[in-house]
Length: 203
Image (cartoon, rainbow, N blue to C red; front, side, top):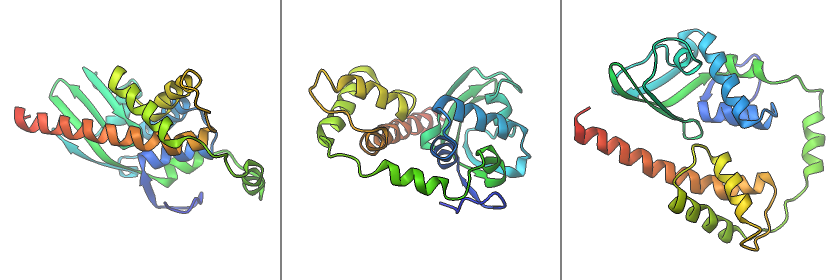
């Protein structure tokens, strides 16, 4: 990942930018998404890039922030860096989304020198957890109820399942390390299935 610098002109994946806002900006997940989408809606076209399957949508972020052409269907997969939607012209998928740091970094709060290092020292080493049991709970939930829209939602569901399963729920950081890959793998399978369906339908 690019070094965080407010003068940086580099780009990063949308999913990485979202993660940065959550971890460094301390935004709740839903607010991080809303903040980043609104910032991109106001940004210049050159400040973000994406590949499209179907048809291109130059005003993608204006649409997602409530403006522009109405969307008939939107299924964002922000943590996996792709968005599936449908408008009057048909279905499309935006993927491999890249965002300029000059859009992302101003959204971060200013920190005093050394503040982050002190915070990291306070966290300490996470305790041992029953990783495989927690991963199994995540997979079982997806099988029974379907894939939640975001990894954070799946983490919340799995955390609720831990006490009945007599599993010790770890910290948020460790939970993300365990449940995140499960969610990512399931989303990748879903994306591959949808792309295959679009190819077969000729869209």
